Length: 241
Picture 1 (cartoon, helix red, strand yellow):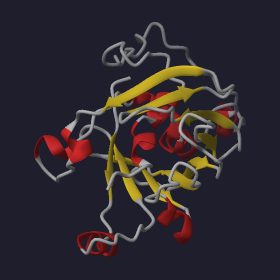
Picture 2 (cartoon, rainbow, N blue to C red):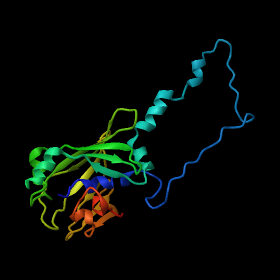
Picture 3 (cartoon, rainbow, N blue to C red):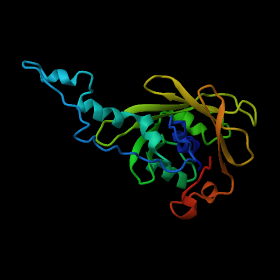
Picture 4 (tube, rainbow, N blue to C red):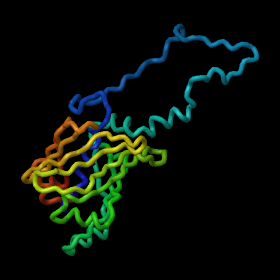
């Protein structure tokens, strides 16, 4: 069945603080050449001086390497698009084939277009609330998802938490809202709102003040929505912004 969490994860990178708008084209890296010998400043050391004093104010090399690698927001700002791949759960797939699917905790690899994994998301919702996601009251059910930054060669770091509280939702009344919270600071970054539509997947992306900034519309005519398969046009669902 359709996964209610995946559309929220697909456009998570739109909350980056990148100076480039989504439609500004590919990013350009500018390289600066080393100064000419005549432009380099000479450093004189007085007799008896401690060479370590020259490093005052400079970041240690190890810290300089770790900071950009562990900065999840900086990584998101460099990505033009993300791909979300759900990890299959054997028990869930078997019960789905038997006609009585048991919802397990979803796990996702969040990758760039080259297939390199940069983030990992895992659902923290308990078993009872997961089963509510496939019932008639699925819009009322709450859920939580933790996203970790997984830079190559470094341990995973807590990055972002997605959480939607339980609330009474009926048609267009009190539509569900999922908040995006920075795990390091506890500050709210933005939110997603699921407006009332007939059969299409549409989401309002809002800032920390709950003001609409973007609209994601997946439509209702994509083959991947009605007949998800592991290959062909049914293997993907696109969400224009």
